[in-house]
Length: 377
Ligand code: GAL
Image (cartoon, rainbow, N blue to C red; front, side):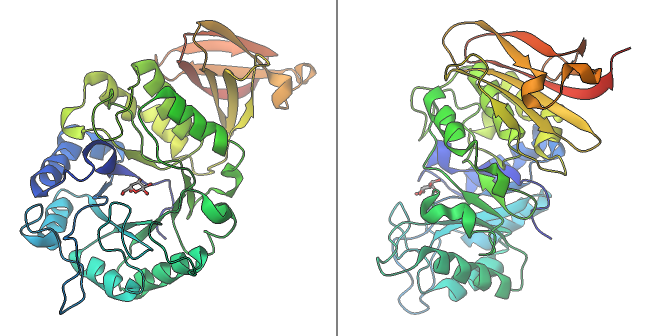
């Protein structure tokens, strides 16, 4: 079965947009291995939009790889990615053109799926632009899912219709392994916070085999690249990355992985955070705003092995102490139980809390713990 855990990898779009080519892909595949991303579990290297010529081949009707960007075709690129022990992803669209106006797969689904399989593709991101008005979105996703299944290759199907048509209600049945539920992210605090707010109550639909995809991460972009926007600081990146983990969302990096700084690398390879993301039970967190305004959140996520993840998010502009009342999450004080916690950024055991926690958190930052529910001695 594909996608037993939330998929992890890297995608070209956030940083490079149309500016992609074979050397970028080779260098990025090397970087997966050399930086330790691969060892940490990152697996899929995905080429997004803009990889082809503007028109299909008039004789074969096939999409043609761009002659300057990918002069040796895509099979060679896929082979290189596979030689590094990674999986290879590509992109198409359910409309007649892709979002950046290259040929889309509408009415060519089976032909294109066969071509992707011949290239050696393991993952297909499938966008939603330039769809004929009389075409039904769910039908087009089902059609491509069937074309991929008929291709003879295991290809993870990553649907990207930005949450339209109440996607969460039908996409699992349509055969996708993950589904974009929001518009495009950019590298700003406002963007990742809005994404989380809009999806916080929708993760009940997300789980093994088909995950809510809240977009590629901007962690480590620092305002550079296509969706660079105003940029974020490291506190924001800790918040963004750990939020994606609390939701067990797919983790697709979007920064230039050839030039990761130490903080970014440490964050995205934090084994404890990754364990939360990849937790086998894949439960969404229970969420409360803790200061009766819209600028803080506390979360409790049940994990397997009877453990928990606890997280505090300060989305305000001032440093504050954030309270978490255990009774609001279901644990009464008279039970005699409380949480023994370990801070996942410092690695330190921070002792036992009964009834409540009060944790100082700097503006834009977060605190994340792994917790065990134990009896007070
Ligand atoms: C958007 C999609 C982005 C990116 C872009 C390519 O629709 O949400 O993630 O794939 O198209 O043109």
